[in-house]
Image (spheres, rainbow, N blue to C red):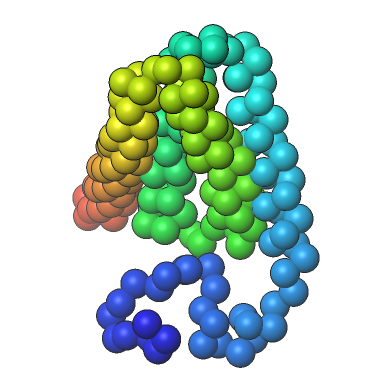
Length: 175
C-alpha cells in the first residue's frame, strides 16, 4: 500500500510520510532513544539470563519468560500509546520504550540459539516444544495484555465520564 486509504489505520502512527515536514524530520533523537532503550532492555535480558541460566540440555526458561513478559508489555504499551491516552504521548516514547527497551529485552536471536543448542544436544522433542510453546505464549501474552489494557482504559474512561457528569449535575450540593 503506497497511498493512504480512506479510513485505514496508519502503519506507523508516529510518522506520516505523506506529510513532507515529517519526512524531513531529523532522525538523531529517534535513533538515540532506540539506542538507549535497547541498551537498557538488552542489559535487563542479559542480567536475567545470568540469574537464571539454562543447562546444556535444559529448557531455556529465562529466554522463554523474557519473551513472554516482553510481549505482554508490548501489548500494554501499544494500547496505551495508540488507543488509551487523553493526550498524545511524547514522540520518543514509542521508539524508546517499544523499539528500544522492549525490543532489546525480547530476543529472537537468543530464542533461535537456544533452539539450535537443544537440537545439537539431541533434545529434538524439547527443542520443538520450546519453539512452539514460545510462539503460543508470546502471542497469547500480547493478545491478553492488550485486551486487558483496553478493558481497563475503557473502564477508566467510563468512570471519569460518570464523575464529570455528576459534577455538572444541577442541584448538586457543594460541601
